Image 1 (cartoon, rainbow, N blue to C red):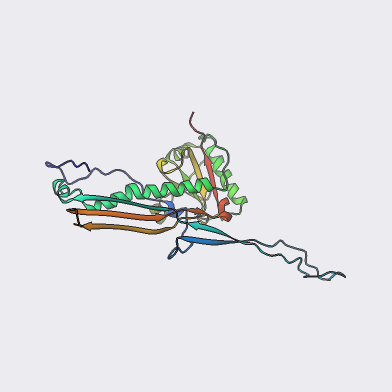
Image 2: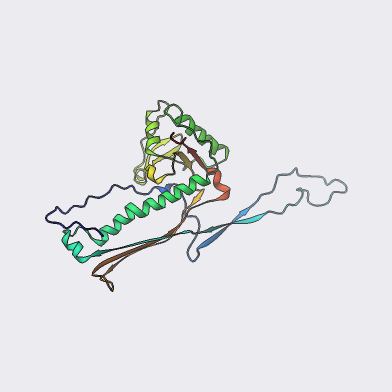
Length: 281
Protein backbone atom coordinates (compact mmCIF):
# COMPACT_ATOMS: atom_id res chain seq x y z
CA UNK A 1 0.00 0.00 0.00
CA UNK A 2 1.47 3.38 -1.03
CA UNK A 3 1.54 5.87 1.85
CA UNK A 4 2.55 9.55 1.60
CA UNK A 5 4.19 10.36 4.92
CA UNK A 6 3.13 13.65 6.46
CA UNK A 7 5.60 16.40 7.17
CA UNK A 8 2.98 18.89 8.35
CA UNK A 9 -0.48 18.64 6.84
CA UNK A 10 -3.81 19.81 8.08
CA UNK A 11 -5.98 16.99 9.50
CA UNK A 12 -7.94 16.63 6.28
CA UNK A 13 -8.36 13.83 3.75
CA UNK A 14 -9.16 14.57 0.10
CA UNK A 15 -12.27 12.37 -0.14
CA UNK A 16 -13.78 11.20 -3.42
CA UNK A 17 -17.32 12.22 -4.24
CA UNK A 18 -19.91 9.48 -3.88
CA UNK A 19 -23.69 9.11 -4.03
CA UNK A 20 -25.90 7.32 -1.54
CA UNK A 21 -27.93 4.39 -2.82
CA UNK A 22 -31.50 4.97 -3.98
CA UNK A 23 -32.35 1.34 -4.79
CA UNK A 24 -34.63 0.99 -1.76
CA UNK A 25 -37.17 3.18 -3.60
CA UNK A 26 -37.16 0.80 -6.58
CA UNK A 27 -37.11 -2.61 -4.90
CA UNK A 28 -38.71 -4.57 -2.09
CA UNK A 29 -37.76 -6.98 0.68
CA UNK A 30 -40.92 -9.07 0.54
CA UNK A 31 -39.37 -12.48 1.14
CA UNK A 32 -37.70 -13.94 4.22
CA UNK A 33 -34.14 -15.15 3.58
CA UNK A 34 -33.17 -15.97 7.15
CA UNK A 35 -31.91 -19.54 7.32
CA UNK A 36 -32.07 -19.98 3.54
CA UNK A 37 -29.89 -19.22 0.53
CA UNK A 38 -32.64 -20.13 -1.93
CA UNK A 39 -36.29 -19.09 -1.88
CA UNK A 40 -39.04 -20.66 -3.96
CA UNK A 41 -42.09 -18.57 -4.82
CA UNK A 42 -45.35 -20.05 -6.10
CA UNK A 43 -47.01 -18.79 -9.26
CA UNK A 44 -50.66 -19.87 -9.27
CA UNK A 45 -52.81 -19.64 -12.40
CA UNK A 46 -56.45 -18.48 -12.53
CA UNK A 47 -59.71 -19.83 -13.90
CA UNK A 48 -61.72 -18.28 -16.77
CA UNK A 49 -65.18 -16.80 -16.23
CA UNK A 50 -68.21 -18.82 -17.40
CA UNK A 51 -71.93 -18.19 -17.95
CA UNK A 52 -73.77 -19.61 -14.95
CA UNK A 53 -76.47 -22.11 -15.88
CA UNK A 54 -79.59 -21.58 -13.71
CA UNK A 55 -81.43 -24.48 -15.31
CA UNK A 56 -79.52 -27.68 -15.85
CA UNK A 57 -80.06 -28.78 -19.44
CA UNK A 58 -81.09 -32.36 -19.93
CA UNK A 59 -78.06 -34.59 -20.11
CA UNK A 60 -75.74 -31.95 -18.58
CA UNK A 61 -73.23 -33.26 -16.08
CA UNK A 62 -70.92 -31.42 -13.75
CA UNK A 63 -71.29 -28.01 -12.16
CA UNK A 64 -73.71 -25.23 -13.11
CA UNK A 65 -70.70 -22.93 -12.63
CA UNK A 66 -68.96 -24.41 -15.67
CA UNK A 67 -66.27 -26.94 -16.36
CA UNK A 68 -64.06 -27.48 -13.32
CA UNK A 69 -60.48 -26.47 -14.05
CA UNK A 70 -57.29 -27.36 -12.22
CA UNK A 71 -55.09 -24.44 -11.23
CA UNK A 72 -51.43 -24.66 -12.16
CA UNK A 73 -49.01 -24.02 -9.29
CA UNK A 74 -45.44 -23.61 -10.51
CA UNK A 75 -42.51 -22.10 -8.69
CA UNK A 76 -39.83 -19.53 -9.27
CA UNK A 77 -36.53 -20.29 -7.58
CA UNK A 78 -34.28 -17.48 -6.38
CA UNK A 79 -30.74 -18.35 -5.30
CA UNK A 80 -28.39 -15.64 -4.08
CA UNK A 81 -25.40 -15.47 -6.41
CA UNK A 82 -23.38 -12.49 -5.18
CA UNK A 83 -21.14 -13.27 -2.19
CA UNK A 84 -18.51 -10.52 -2.19
CA UNK A 85 -15.74 -9.46 0.17
CA UNK A 86 -12.80 -7.14 0.72
CA UNK A 87 -9.93 -6.77 3.15
CA UNK A 88 -7.14 -4.28 3.85
CA UNK A 89 -4.72 -3.43 6.62
CA UNK A 90 -3.71 -0.15 8.22
CA UNK A 91 -0.30 -0.33 9.84
CA UNK A 92 0.20 1.53 13.13
CA UNK A 93 3.06 3.59 11.70
CA UNK A 94 0.98 4.50 8.65
CA UNK A 95 -1.67 5.84 10.97
CA UNK A 96 0.80 7.71 13.14
CA UNK A 97 2.83 9.22 10.29
CA UNK A 98 -0.20 10.51 8.39
CA UNK A 99 -1.34 12.60 11.37
CA UNK A 100 -4.05 10.06 12.23
CA UNK A 101 -5.78 10.56 8.88
CA UNK A 102 -5.55 6.89 7.94
CA UNK A 103 -7.90 5.31 10.45
CA UNK A 104 -9.69 1.97 10.28
CA UNK A 105 -13.20 3.24 11.02
CA UNK A 106 -13.10 6.07 8.47
CA UNK A 107 -11.42 3.81 5.90
CA UNK A 108 -14.19 1.23 6.33
CA UNK A 109 -16.88 3.88 5.91
CA UNK A 110 -15.09 5.11 2.79
CA UNK A 111 -14.94 1.56 1.41
CA UNK A 112 -18.68 1.13 1.89
CA UNK A 113 -19.52 4.50 0.39
CA UNK A 114 -17.19 4.43 -2.60
CA UNK A 115 -16.93 0.71 -3.43
CA UNK A 116 -19.63 -1.46 -1.87
CA UNK A 117 -22.70 0.71 -2.47
CA UNK A 118 -21.80 1.53 -6.12
CA UNK A 119 -21.22 -2.16 -6.89
CA UNK A 120 -24.56 -3.25 -5.44
CA UNK A 121 -26.41 -0.41 -7.17
CA UNK A 122 -24.83 -1.17 -10.55
CA UNK A 123 -25.77 -4.84 -10.27
CA UNK A 124 -29.39 -4.19 -9.23
CA UNK A 125 -30.02 -1.60 -11.95
CA UNK A 126 -28.49 -3.95 -14.51
CA UNK A 127 -30.79 -6.80 -13.51
CA UNK A 128 -33.86 -4.56 -13.64
CA UNK A 129 -33.04 -3.21 -17.10
CA UNK A 130 -32.26 -6.65 -18.53
CA UNK A 131 -35.45 -8.21 -17.12
CA UNK A 132 -37.80 -5.30 -17.91
CA UNK A 133 -41.11 -6.42 -19.40
CA UNK A 134 -41.27 -3.34 -21.63
CA UNK A 135 -38.14 -2.76 -23.74
CA UNK A 136 -38.89 -0.73 -26.86
CA UNK A 137 -36.26 -0.25 -29.53
CA UNK A 138 -33.42 2.10 -28.68
CA UNK A 139 -33.98 5.70 -29.71
CA UNK A 140 -32.20 9.01 -29.45
CA UNK A 141 -33.80 10.98 -26.64
CA UNK A 142 -34.01 14.71 -27.25
CA UNK A 143 -35.55 17.78 -25.66
CA UNK A 144 -38.49 17.44 -28.07
CA UNK A 145 -39.34 13.76 -27.51
CA UNK A 146 -38.37 13.06 -23.89
CA UNK A 147 -41.78 14.02 -22.47
CA UNK A 148 -43.66 11.97 -25.07
CA UNK A 149 -41.51 8.92 -24.33
CA UNK A 150 -42.08 9.21 -20.58
CA UNK A 151 -45.84 9.53 -21.06
CA UNK A 152 -45.78 6.52 -23.41
CA UNK A 153 -43.90 4.53 -20.78
CA UNK A 154 -46.46 5.34 -18.13
CA UNK A 155 -49.23 4.47 -20.57
CA UNK A 156 -47.65 1.04 -21.12
CA UNK A 157 -47.62 0.46 -17.36
CA UNK A 158 -51.24 1.64 -17.12
CA UNK A 159 -52.32 -0.87 -19.76
CA UNK A 160 -50.43 -3.60 -17.90
CA UNK A 161 -52.46 -2.68 -14.78
CA UNK A 162 -49.38 -1.72 -12.78
CA UNK A 163 -50.32 0.28 -9.64
CA UNK A 164 -50.31 3.99 -10.39
CA UNK A 165 -48.86 4.99 -7.03
CA UNK A 166 -45.19 4.58 -6.04
CA UNK A 167 -43.85 4.45 -9.60
CA UNK A 168 -40.23 5.59 -9.84
CA UNK A 169 -38.70 7.30 -12.87
CA UNK A 170 -34.94 6.67 -12.97
CA UNK A 171 -32.89 9.06 -15.09
CA UNK A 172 -29.21 9.69 -15.67
CA UNK A 173 -27.84 13.24 -15.27
CA UNK A 174 -27.81 13.60 -19.07
CA UNK A 175 -31.46 12.58 -19.38
CA UNK A 176 -32.41 14.88 -16.52
CA UNK A 177 -30.76 17.75 -18.38
CA UNK A 178 -32.94 17.00 -21.41
CA UNK A 179 -36.02 17.01 -19.17
CA UNK A 180 -35.14 20.41 -17.74
CA UNK A 181 -34.73 21.84 -21.25
CA UNK A 182 -38.00 20.35 -22.55
CA UNK A 183 -40.67 23.04 -22.82
CA UNK A 184 -43.46 20.47 -22.36
CA UNK A 185 -42.27 19.25 -18.97
CA UNK A 186 -43.39 21.00 -15.83
CA UNK A 187 -41.89 19.11 -12.91
CA UNK A 188 -43.37 19.25 -9.45
CA UNK A 189 -40.46 20.14 -7.20
CA UNK A 190 -42.39 20.62 -3.97
CA UNK A 191 -41.33 17.27 -2.53
CA UNK A 192 -41.79 16.14 1.07
CA UNK A 193 -38.55 16.24 3.04
CA UNK A 194 -38.68 12.51 3.78
CA UNK A 195 -38.70 11.79 0.05
CA UNK A 196 -35.90 14.26 -0.65
CA UNK A 197 -33.76 12.48 1.93
CA UNK A 198 -34.30 9.24 0.00
CA UNK A 199 -33.26 10.90 -3.25
CA UNK A 200 -36.51 12.00 -4.91
CA UNK A 201 -35.90 15.28 -6.75
CA UNK A 202 -39.24 15.88 -8.50
CA UNK A 203 -42.54 14.41 -9.70
CA UNK A 204 -43.55 14.03 -13.34
CA UNK A 205 -46.67 12.39 -14.75
CA UNK A 206 -47.35 10.88 -11.33
CA UNK A 207 -43.92 9.25 -10.97
CA UNK A 208 -41.22 10.14 -8.47
CA UNK A 209 -38.01 11.16 -10.21
CA UNK A 210 -34.60 10.00 -8.99
CA UNK A 211 -31.26 10.80 -10.61
CA UNK A 212 -28.56 8.12 -10.67
CA UNK A 213 -24.96 8.62 -11.82
CA UNK A 214 -24.31 7.16 -15.28
CA UNK A 215 -21.46 4.98 -13.97
CA UNK A 216 -24.01 2.94 -11.99
CA UNK A 217 -26.34 2.42 -14.96
CA UNK A 218 -26.09 0.17 -18.03
CA UNK A 219 -24.42 1.57 -21.13
CA UNK A 220 -26.71 3.73 -23.29
CA UNK A 221 -29.22 4.10 -20.46
CA UNK A 222 -32.11 6.41 -21.33
CA UNK A 223 -34.64 6.12 -18.52
CA UNK A 224 -36.54 3.50 -16.58
CA UNK A 225 -39.93 3.56 -14.87
CA UNK A 226 -40.41 0.84 -12.30
CA UNK A 227 -42.77 -0.12 -9.52
CA UNK A 228 -41.03 -1.57 -6.44
CA UNK A 229 -43.34 -4.61 -6.44
CA UNK A 230 -41.41 -6.06 -9.41
CA UNK A 231 -37.91 -6.43 -8.00
CA UNK A 232 -36.77 -8.25 -4.88
CA UNK A 233 -33.31 -7.07 -3.80
CA UNK A 234 -32.25 -8.97 -0.68
CA UNK A 235 -29.08 -8.40 1.31
CA UNK A 236 -28.81 -11.60 3.32
CA UNK A 237 -25.51 -10.80 5.01
CA UNK A 238 -23.64 -7.56 5.53
CA UNK A 239 -20.70 -8.10 7.87
CA UNK A 240 -17.86 -5.65 8.54
CA UNK A 241 -15.07 -6.13 11.09
CA UNK A 242 -12.05 -4.23 12.40
CA UNK A 243 -9.45 -6.46 14.09
CA UNK A 244 -6.93 -4.55 16.19
CA UNK A 245 -3.46 -6.14 16.32
CA UNK A 246 -4.47 -9.56 14.96
CA UNK A 247 -1.73 -12.22 14.81
CA UNK A 248 0.96 -11.21 12.31
CA UNK A 249 -0.12 -7.56 11.97
CA UNK A 250 0.81 -4.46 13.94
CA UNK A 251 -2.21 -2.34 13.26
CA UNK A 252 -5.80 -2.84 12.15
CA UNK A 253 -7.08 -5.52 9.80
CA UNK A 254 -10.38 -4.56 8.13
CA UNK A 255 -12.62 -7.22 6.57
CA UNK A 256 -16.00 -6.99 4.93
CA UNK A 257 -18.47 -9.36 3.33
CA UNK A 258 -21.82 -8.76 1.66
CA UNK A 259 -24.17 -11.38 0.21
CA UNK A 260 -26.83 -9.87 -2.04
CA UNK A 261 -28.77 -10.29 -5.27
CA UNK A 262 -31.73 -8.95 -7.25
CA UNK A 263 -34.62 -10.81 -8.87
CA UNK A 264 -37.49 -9.62 -11.04
CA UNK A 265 -40.67 -11.66 -10.48
CA UNK A 266 -42.00 -13.37 -13.60
CA UNK A 267 -45.54 -12.09 -13.05
CA UNK A 268 -44.32 -8.55 -12.36
CA UNK A 269 -41.95 -7.92 -15.29
CA UNK A 270 -44.53 -5.61 -16.87
CA UNK A 271 -44.02 -3.26 -13.93
CA UNK A 272 -40.65 -2.21 -15.39
CA UNK A 273 -40.24 -0.10 -18.52
CA UNK A 274 -36.71 0.45 -19.83
CA UNK A 275 -35.92 2.86 -22.63
CA UNK A 276 -32.42 2.50 -24.05
CA UNK A 277 -30.61 5.29 -25.86
CA UNK A 278 -29.14 4.75 -29.31
CA UNK A 279 -25.42 4.04 -29.06
CA UNK A 280 -23.20 6.97 -29.93
CA UNK A 281 -21.77 6.69 -33.44
